[in-house]
Length: 256
Ligand SMILES: Nc1ncnc2c1ncn2[C@@H]1O[C@H](COP(=O)(O)OP(=O)(O)OP(=O)(O)O)[C@@H](O)[C@H]1O
Ligand SMILES: [Mg+2]
Image (cartoon, rainbow, N blue to C red; front, side, top):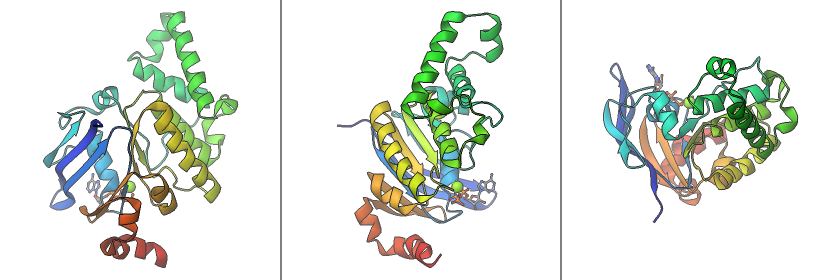
């Protein structure tokens, strides 16, 4: 039986009187790619913020590898093996591609740039450099390693953000709209890239995405939320034929 990586159990969160998420039940198992879809403002990013400890749910629980992470701090959650990317790309834009990955590796090794530089711990530094190079090569980003990250195309910046998340050696990778702003070719490449990540890095992936082709192609399971409530869950086929979903979401897309 595959291991249960993440479980949201009747998880809810209110902001003031507003219910942003209401009793959400969701599961991600080992090496699954699971998608959360739903209209703008449905509560998708809020769910990621709850999982990563930025918000504390006001009801229900969140289990990671069978243990509650409800009151665990964000840095600890990263250390436990949950990494994420953001809806609005967050890179050190003035730094190079290589530097962005090295910084993530420093975070994993729980030291900071100053101690490691001034202690001149060369062996450890060399290991990190090798690891950063390996990571960039495996993500086809090595040839850009000395480029300033903001000079990369949008698609490559998104890939760099994923590479940086992988540097923390996650067991669960959360991707918030990884294909946002990508052209169709970049979106197709990303679809293949996400599958490759799952296989090469033995990671489970939970992603939020509006690009339906990508979602339908790669997801083992899809959760649809609307106004903070789960309205459907199932395989691509089941979701595509679900009347509630067509009405709440896919219908909206067709008319867009
Ligand atoms: N810190 C907060 N304080 C108050 N309301 C919030 C807060 N964070 C999120 N919300 C509200 O929660 C709801 C869900 O927002 P969320 O960003 O999760 O939507 P989303 O599904 O990610 O939408 P999109 O597809 O546009 O990214 C919105 O009504 C939003 O205004
Ligand atoms: Mg969002």
